[in-house]
Picture (cartoon, rainbow, N blue to C red):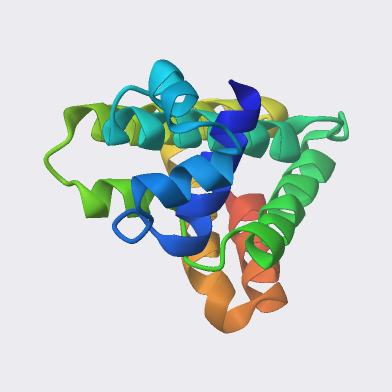
Length: 168
């Protein structure tokens, strides 16, 4: 299933959610149509599988091996978001893109909320900013939006804002 989800994630990230046909998705997953439908019985399930895979990869990228010191963890975390933007997200946040493509889907909205809440919660924990999850989320989301225009300056600005947050 991991290989299928990885292929689906890649296809949706590269081509969006409307463009790839089921045959394109099958090819990206590297399996037969029958196998694709066995594990993801609908296009909605294919999108969710791709997002679950992306969620796991993103958490690993951001949080594995962070420094123990809160300020160093904050800097490393924001650097890693910048690195992710440089290599993984040519078209913006895949989770927001999925919801934009199907705004009526409660499952996608729930997935978006769960993803953002987990990222913010873990970020608050490792940076010593418990209770500041919303503020951290705003900084991280702002960084992802500003990256396309300002790149490393956006990371620098996010670090300044993060350091200015009062710790409880």
